[in-house]
Image (cartoon, rainbow, N blue to C red):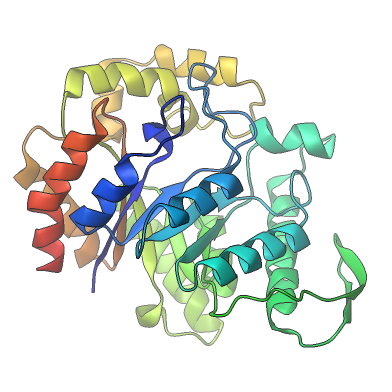
Length: 327
């Protein structure tokens, strides 16, 4: 079964009414996701909303669709992992079976201000793995316990509000090294890469690491975020340059100033945007591209839409894309 999701982070308006939510549910999307940042990726995109408030509101305004964060960063900067465990436990009790959790190592833009320094990638990954261990123990242990990790230490800790149903942890892996850790420690994989990178690098490394950890990679969900637009392509290219390309194409994960991230994206030529993002006037070509992801093992496709008209995109998915994959 192929799942179809949408990242709605760039659909927010100034009043946060999220009118797109009911449209997404009626269209048949399986999931809707929201990013988690203290500062927005780009200075001109001012919606640095507190994702935990948004998740609760999104779940309350819908009936069945799953809502998730892609991704939060429980490495001890903005968030201690015990607080994320508490937040997820609360949400899952309120909306059983509908809460999805994506985790990653974070970016300097959001975390450095809280940590006082920007740890190496290796340390951030070690923190993330330890955080997952602590969160799962809080969700499963039926008595007070001590946690004596390298980065997190807690004495006589207990979480009363445990999830009623297991909450899957999507482990974010953009690079090959992260894919190996995702295979070892993640319940599910989440990545944002080209078809070729997923096929030749991310998926093989993830599958091998999962197998070595005693898990069957064929039974593990692989979620791929694909980014682009299906309507108003020329306007979308300008919008992408301003609010996103500096983060993705330029890989400014260690840059802490959103203004510099934005400036780097604005310098990119249109062709670089067309090459990196899925920008299709023809929906059949778009479907064909998505289908190739499923052929290499992806089974949860999450579309991040940058067009200025979410309603048109949702309608295209309702009429064409979702029926193709879900029958």
